[in-house]
Length: 597
Ligand SMILES: Nc1ncnc2c1ncn2[C@@H]1O[C@H](COP(=O)(O)OP(=O)(O)OP(=O)(O)O)[C@@H](O)[C@H]1O
Ligand SMILES: [Mg+2]
Image 1 (cartoon, rainbow, N blue to C red):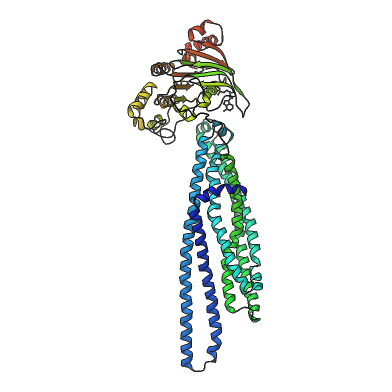
Image 2: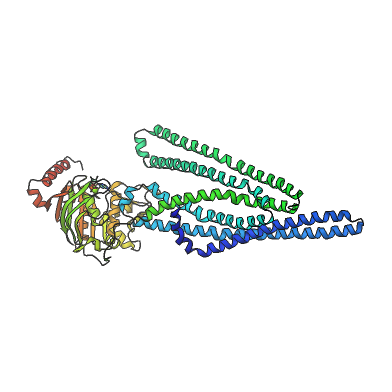
């Protein structure tokens, strides 16, 4: 339960809610105890005076006495009602403070977690699956809210009530109190066990529900493949199987839940019987009054719910502790991508790799081996190589999504670690290989990097990426929705939107990772010649496995298995026998045959 201590700063932030909450708990209990005492007083009053009335012979005297008593009892009754109203009022305030506090804490916690998500390096996302990350920000946080809200509230309530009621009960008659309270610990312990069982089974249900939704989600995104392979029936069978699992677990939960109320009600019943029985005996012996019996019955009822909630509070706190441990584990995860000097000045765009090697920690694959090159503003660098040779890895290192294992990367002659990573990335545009567009309008997708930019910049960027004509053809032009809620763009259109998104920022460094693979050679040429103009005094890295994408570059680096095996411009490379020439000849043949790679 130690992990719950990390919540202290949050409690401290909302201490006034908390303290006020405690005050309201005390007040609400006070107004629950007073009425019980009044019930006792009125019982005793009646019991005492009944005998006296019997002794009065004169009917008028008798009538007068009765009237006085009636008024007295009526006053008690009105007072009890008034106090019940006050109690209700304070119960209202108690929820308004403590439950409100828990919502504030939940809000802060969610924001803290989300902020941490954004800071964590990509390697973290590879290690954890999306479902798990979602669970932390939703499920784990709400479990903690159950603790900071209801559990704390009922916990304090129980404590206050115990101190106030039990100390009073003991002062009336210790023996009587002991008998009356006997069933309560049993109640508390059994609720604890039942509740733990309920939570355990609910978790299983939650898991099977999340399996179910993951399955459905994947089936929806893969619907084209499912249909193309005629696997609808298998998919439906698999769904029925998952769904059946869910039903089975829900019924099991129902079985345990069914025990809950009967158990509580029977234990309360036993308490009541004990109170009346033991109380009756004690009253006969003259140790307590009949008023005390009535009063104790009310106390027992008052204590039942808090005692029931004790078991519940403990199991909630345990679950919250587990959730908080999970959250702490991940909040303690510090991004290793930190800046030493936090340089935020504009860059010129000189990129230099000095003997850089890089190994992916989680797979142990050495993706780059001793890579050295230099790219200056105004220069375009083509990076060519077969699939898996480390091209994208190289691009990832330039924008510092990862840090190099050995060797140095310099930006404008300064180690990449001395720059502020966010400011660095803002000055570079990296068009990634697997295009990701948001389900939003084309406009918002293009202006994603800087929504402040105007119409002119957006149109210009679309023109440069040869997208404008396409967009003009859509009915809603730039307001066309894409993705789930809108039209589906072709592969080449998507790539061009992502290029426009990069160009609109007018970056100092532009990295295009295989993002012309889905456009034909003619469009590719148009875009490349636009780029040459646009990137005149800037640095461009063009990654591809197609010679046609890189042959215009000032320098071409040919990569193989993580190494640079050849470099030079097209004319130089074509003259020597080597991988470049081999690839050139192979691709020339394919192009002549009329098929694109
Ligand atoms: N995030 C990652 N974690 C672990 N290994 C990776 C990761 N990304 C790539 N790899 C591995 O590193 C090697 C180089 O991959 P990389 O993506 O750089 O190749 P590439 O040249 O871009 O290939 P392609 O032309 O197919 O895009 C591959 O063997 C790949 O399996
Ligand atoms: Mg790649």
